[in-house]
Image 1: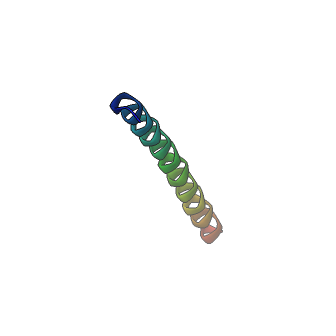
Image 2 (image 1 turned 90 degrees about the vertical axis):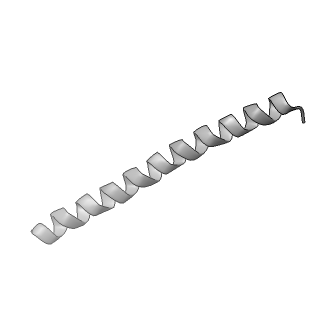
Length: 41
C-alpha cells in the first residue's frame, strides 16, 4: 500500500467514524428525550 493509498484509507475511515459517532449520539439523545417525556407523564 502506497503512502497515498494509506492516507486515503485513513481519511475515509475517519469520515466513517465521525458519521457513526453522530448517529450514535443521535440515538442517545432520542432515548434521553423519550425517557424525559415518559417520566413527565
